[in-house]
Image (cartoon, rainbow, N blue to C red; front, side):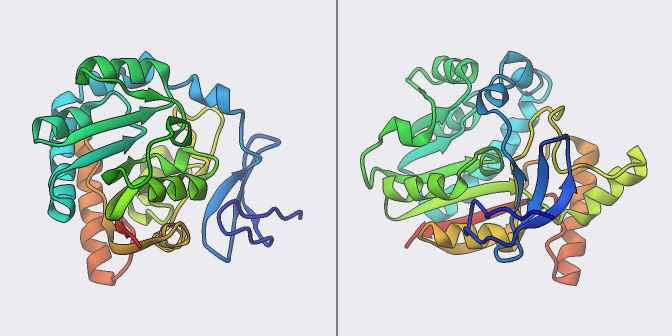
Length: 273
């Protein structure tokens, strides 16, 4: 079985974790515990998925629920960073930045979807950069806080992205990252019971294919490699569907009782070291 170098730690002993549609497969690096798709699918084809159809449910049916989610996340951010200059990488339709703006933040956003960037710019009444973070060429030590809400699992170079985040953060600036949890045992079990099949880590048919799959350990390792000091790691409260919130609530309780990380998604808070 051929091995492949890990895109995060550059270890060369990654092994097959799960097959996918050829030529793709999901590999696991035992050195840093990250799982990743090999080879990565075509970037342009992935980016085209994030058009108006992708955001329709968020903008209409889930708008009020997502507003409560963003409010909770802003309270977490303000608890560690106060208010100041905020960058949201992968800002989507701009809903998070819209609420941050109302609460007194000076906001900026980047987004790879041209449709979402235009929608966010119209919502915010200011430019949103359409493209990769490094292409935006922000000044060094420019932001007080940078957020990446479920972004790292979609990019091909998460370490490089976080290194650029570190460059543009002020000294001791705050980074907040949320990602799906690869060790989400409770939700995975519920999925098997309802769907009667095991959830796949990657498929080209997925609505939003994940190129990386992180555990608490691998996310902590990645952030540290990028030059950050982790301040806190725990469950993310980003689920808006009532049934899934119920299952994840049970997962959070079980994780605390058993000292495990079995919840649906991980939230990590770090500072520029």
